[in-house]
Amino acid sequence: MVGRWPSRWPNSAVSSNALNVADAVRARRMTRAFSPEPLDPEIVDDLLDLATRAPSAGKSQGWHFVVL
Image (cartoon, rainbow, N blue to C red; front, side, top):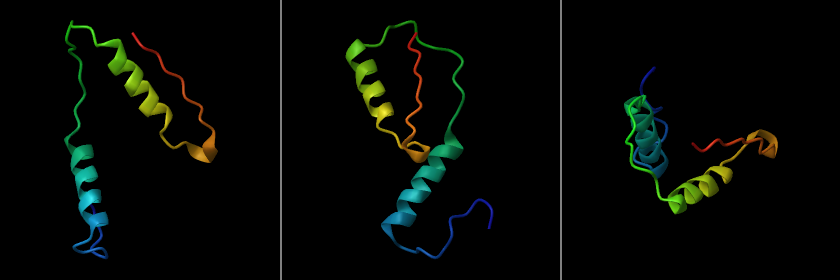
């Protein structure tokens, strides 16, 4: 059953959301060319705020961010 979501949750929101996440993971790509345009500092602040709200193992919250 590699590559398929288990069928034990047919027609459920969990199954639908899980498939969307699986599709997103499969479609991700490495970016090696970046736009020279700077980001709005407010966007960077919002992204960092969201990142700090991510779950961590044992609530260790051992994040380190580097913004270039």
